[in-house]
Image 1 (cartoon, rainbow, N blue to C red):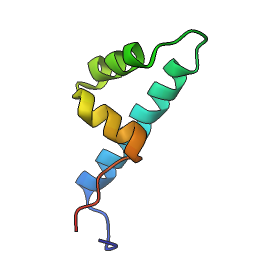
Image 2: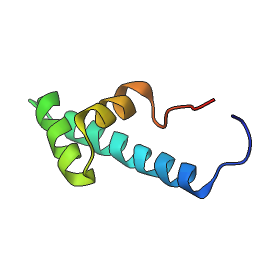
Image 3: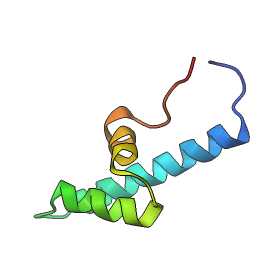
Length: 65
C-alpha cells in the first residue's frame, strides 16, 4: 500500500513515533525496568500492552495489504 497517506494513517504514525520516543526515554534511565516503562506508556497513551509492544518492536503502524 504505497498510495497517498490518509489523515488517520498520518495520525497513527505520529502517535507511534511519540510512543516509541517516550518508551526509549523512560527505558534509557539507569535501572529502568521495561515492564514498568511499558506500563507507564500504556497509561499515558491509553493503549493496550500488545499495541505498545507492536509499536516498540514492530516499528509502528501495521501494514494492511
